[in-house]
Image (cartoon, rainbow, N blue to C red):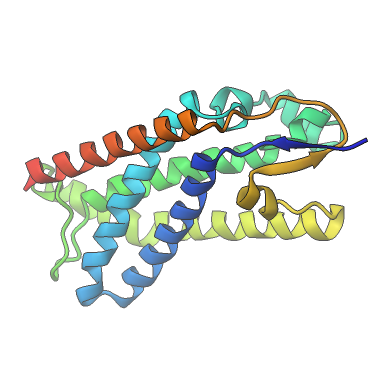
Length: 221
């Protein structure tokens, strides 16, 4: 017997695809440089807004989107890698996927922060450069251009490889649930709440996060 379970609520799915769009925009605009750096900053502010939203949604979102439901102990990760994982661990983010998610969010936060303090010494400078020392600006710029970008590209490639592996090896399509929100399971489990009220709450949270970023940028001048 199979059943359809709502795993990813609409706000989580929109966050995922919006973040992917912004990431692509950041890479392309950063490579082009010049006038495209205006859009590079815009995409960066978009990522900052999305990260703030995801931080809040990690406590207020649907069941499988909450941090508490995909935070695993080292022992759980080891058992999963040995093929001894529990069925529930395959519903949302499995232990390995959860590790990837947290790494991605952490390095995105570092990349955005370093970008705010970076200066290409041509025409583009982050809004925080005038508040920190030249040494901080130099280090932030180096990390942003030479380290953070490459780490994030590696994590994205790793993410895509994992999706391909699960599809080719286990015939498990991980993309479809992130589009439709649902998974077909052979056991009963908790379904994520995804009501109009939940979605309205997400809109309010996102607008507050966006307003905070916009206000901060206005204050920074």
